[in-house]
Image (cartoon, rainbow over all chains, first blue to last red; front, side, top):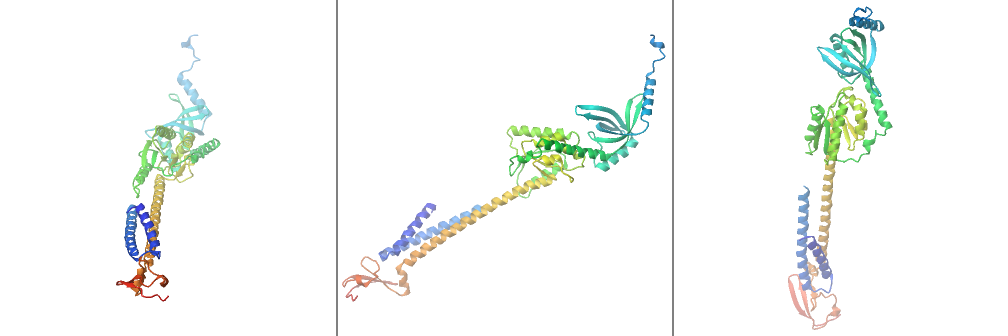
Length: 60
Length: 376
């Protein structure tokens, strides 16, 4: 994941939150949305972790 | 006239004896005389000097002088003890002399004594004269107006290679604990005595020529490891101080002395007491800069880490928001949900008609049901 993909992932998560909060969204869709959000969150966390590692290596 | 029988003519010896007698009548005792030592030479313990006096247009008086060993040795020792410097050419002196005339060698002064304080006073007088001339010419502050590299490392060193101060300086600079590397180049010069000013000025010219030829030089350092007041009197020389004041690169002096500053120190961009202190100053400037850069790196890292922290919390909040909105979260707490034909969760009984097929969601599964009646 790069910075651009991270930004896109956050935008998608924002959309997912809105759809999950929308009462008109069907329960089956919600299940798929939640699964997708879990994948995105995991990828974003990995991106942040590797960025932190790189900073540490650079300055120490 | 027949010269061979002219009894009125004198023998040369008779003439010389008459001059000697006349001079001894004229100067029966010892005299005190002010002069400059134009040159001097010690042979067999005796000191042979040429004394001179200069006016604005050059030499106006000159005479030979000699101090015999039995007088010269205590005199030289007394001078050295009082001033800290050996008697040397170029010094202004006040001497106790006897006018002497030899039929064979002519006129000379026999030197019996010296007043060392006069020589020191003369050096001080010249120092003050140099200051007032430079001040009148507006040159005392000239060096301070130069734009100077905050971290000078390409250094033109003017010194004598065997001077203790030069060795101290280069060793101190090279052995700094941080491992900073300085680029020093020695421009040799005499650092004491009457030839020093001209020699140092010549070295300054060589530095200027190298700089004009494109060599990058941040600063010029004038180093000497200390000495007596009279040894260092050359650093009060007007021509030398003027050359320093007008030099286009910053000049740092470290002449090494305890008393009042020399004029060279006053006109220089910066003066420190010893070459070692000068090296310390340069190393400290680099160490401070190094620390500053290091603190930037730390601040940058902290800022970045804190930014990552914010991004991470924003991600956590989004995740929580999504999970909190998931209606299925209720199922695990023992509730059930009812979904209509589209799969949307039903929130009101009024929308349901008898015969509708609904899905009832439990934590462990889904049940399909059909509506028999609606009492709402």
